[in-house]
Image 1 (cartoon, rainbow over the protein chains, first blue to last red):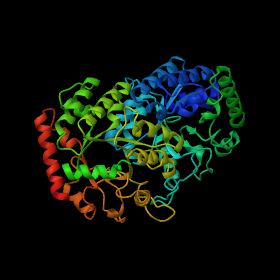
Image 2: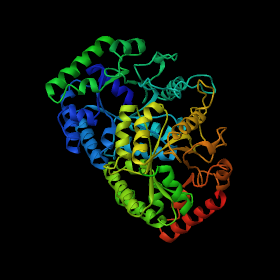
Image 3: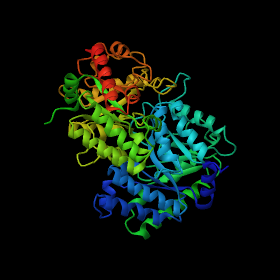
Length: 278
Length: 278
């Protein structure tokens, strides 16, 4: 039986540090790199970032929306990026934020977590709006294949969060309910489990004891969205070593297109995050 | 200025009836049609359904998950299906249930609602978990291009709905808050607006006055999921004519692969729904 995703990730964070580099080939970033907003620009950008951060990033996190905007041709680039990352032994989280009813989530599980899929990643992000019973095909696939699922709890955008702060019939907030439910899933595994949480570093520390999750955290919101390594350290202060993975995107990507600039930015962020968290 | 999506849809429902045929090429359905679970099977299935329902369905609704499971090759089939539907003057709702933070939703808007994208549909389904401010790029793109967005309120799965029934700080349920917020967006438009709601027919009638939405409903849950045309009629009894679009997937698709069987099943569902709703 293979190690769980959580354990593989923990080992990698211990070896390389807690940096996840978000690969967000938006129109604005391609243009700021002096590239056309095209499939060629998309491919150049994605592979350049991967090459520059291979020795620094524990994980890369392609943002699927920015590939999807080119349709099947964009997905071909994403497939190449995933394959190249695998060859370079860099872990990949597909930031897809997928969710549907259970019978449909079988399709998303096949897409993102099954060996035979060209989109197969080490983990995928998912949205809990349709409930945890509906997510079961994704959770089962992750558990069966040694891969992971990160469920959105409190996202990094602070503009409006009526749903995430709504109260369930148990009188806890939705984001706390998500944390508690995921902790329950991870109890099924020995050691660190395969179900993680997305929790923005722009948010207040929740009441839930974050150290008891039994799985990893993926933490966006650092850099251009305003949070600092110190914010992350404060929120996750009692979590076990190697369970907090911090995603930085634009604050690194804007240092391109020169590889040296990208590499330096990634190393600086990695060192700052390691210093604050370890 | 082009007609709004809501008005185009209303016209089409008045002409053809309220049937939306869901195209769900799952492994199980491909096998039940005697096809391999492959890209070839996917293409055969999708184009056969489109051809069989062209004169009966107001709209087709490809379920993106079942194309995505084949990666870029599956998306190429989806692009062909969308193009063929456009040529046949059948409207298309991309059932993608996408959502992310605002800057990322720009990418999803480009993918599903911009003219230059090979995935461009008449409308796309979206998930409200990250808030309505985050959805703004999708709502704006729909309004600017005469296309539509359907926001999930109460989904058709009845297994677990802790989030959809949670109470916001205004002490209304999340699903009611989504309805009320969408009604507010539609007030920006003259006539029927471009923002619709996904509301499962397996659910109770909400307290919100559904006739006041100012936009269309997409109603799953009929057929294999257990709801009947009469359930739909009861829930939406006072809505204006042509604003309720009912999605039927497996109950029609399992009548394939023979075109005559598919055509008959679609006509029967269309007639039953027209009879109950009009």
